[in-house]
Image 1 (cartoon, helix red, strand yellow):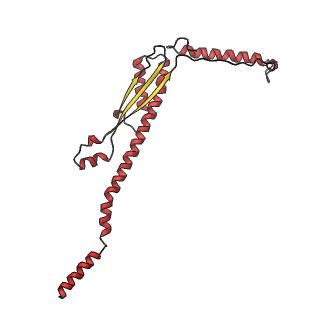
Image 2: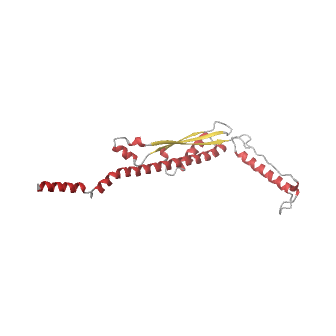
Image 3: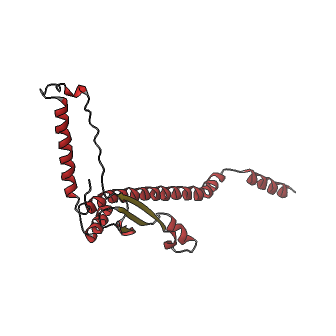
Length: 208
């Protein structure tokens, strides 16, 4: 009887003992905690690379549009767009991207320039998790695309609204000339500046 009572006492004490539970609970909870951290790291990096790709694409679109306006050949424009795009990729590997350039279909400089970039994002932690359950690490890659459109216009229309009221007959401050005469000189300078800019736009007929 004494031995049985003593055994039951030991079992009850063992059942009430909680001293080893902290290590067990920590081991159990570490798995989802580490999984959450890994997911957060991968998601944050994915968002960053996606934004950097879009920023590089927008910058390449604006710069490439300038090349088209100056009369560069189609091959030169596409090569410039690819180089400019890849240079502006900060944390994105150019090897993981594919750039498609669609040039405007108007021979006079108008139309829409379209740049589309495809990016393959390779997660840091997800491949290891996939391999643990017997899947290929390649299945964890994330593919997405970014798009940028730049509208090129053929011509620029400029209208000058000039003041010819009575106050324009007075002298300009510190010039000794009438305001209307100063206005005429300024208007001519503006027209000359626009004309010089128009001459540089080789693909466009009568741009201004």
